[in-house]
Length: 245
Image 1 (cartoon, one colour):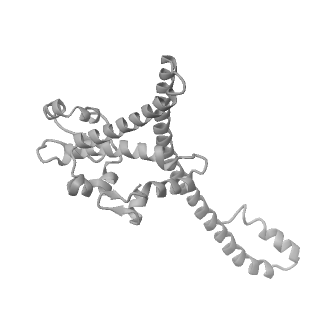
Image 2: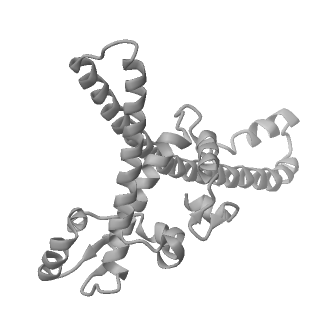
Image 3: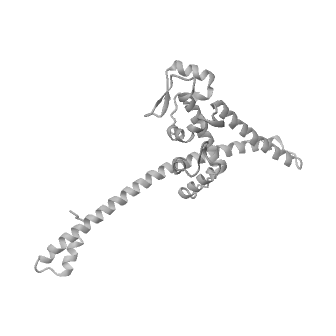
């Protein structure tokens, strides 16, 4: 998301243009070709969760009527006196999770969504965002129920079957969230591996340059040694990789 935002191609006042999820899917496909992560539901679900959590933290730190909260840059978490926390949590239950939990994505997500939260039709409160997410979940549930009604007109569905369907739905949602989180962790590990490989390549290139310089310096000297054949000179030069200095 950060790379896509920095590129600017899909930026909008509300964060991103509508088609950005498809672009994210393509970006992940290049890095993780076997992950099979899709814009919907994998990426969409994970991003909705991230934006909801970011909004909770953002409102604590930047809300109009809030004071006493601070941001610990080193630990990446919200800090405040116990009295401030207790008072705020009484009316904002959703903030409880961040009393002792860090949120390492806050700065990056602020760069993407802060303008969206401060202006226009999307200047929502956390309650608005959570209500919107719940409404989307209800809509998805209603669609699922309508499909069941349609199939139920042809055959009765037992209570055991309904329980199984609900369990499968919950498992699917949890699996999608876990897959998105796994992809995020793999992406981070992949970047670290890439940096490590790049460092090794640079070291190898420097080593090869050192060997070439040693060969160029040593060969004229070997030519001045009487009695050495051409084959013996090359055999001497072949020892340089083992003793480049």
